[in-house]
Image 1 (cartoon, rainbow, N blue to C red):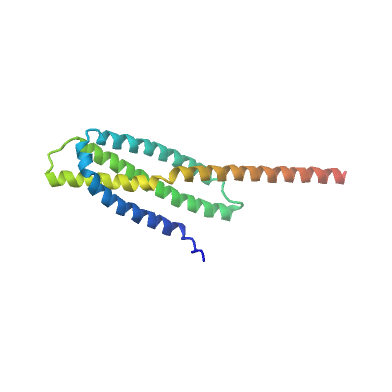
Image 2 (cartoon, rainbow, N blue to C red):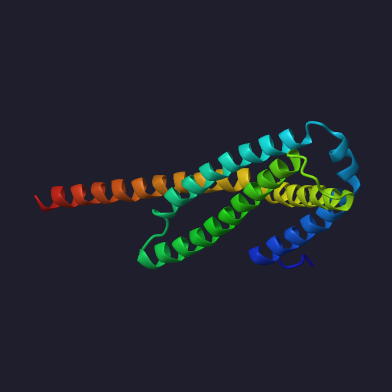
Length: 176
């Protein structure tokens, strides 16, 4: 027997817990290489700045698509609530990107931290980077899905409008 699918929130929680566990492990394992690399700061800042730009685009497109969802006002209201929740998650991810960029920048300043302080700062950066990267993997698919749904809604609306116009036109011809 096939197990029941998990609700979306449960899946997100499982992915978050997985990402955090992997983040802890990789932060400890990769920290020595991060410290030895002269370009790790620049790479992280560049990667997450690009991801932040992509996410801002996704937020904009997602907000635009939320307006025309739903067959009636109740369905549109429900879809708007879902869109708001999704936008809040995207804003949290954007804040995470900016936190990684800020921490990587602070780390690149080579402030006089103790050895342990430097190690824990680098581990924190790597932990957040792993969590954010895993959280970002699904974003392109979500964006494409949202745009395809929007296209389908436009086609369905146009079909309804043209069918209604055709039926009205046919009704006028019969009456004449």
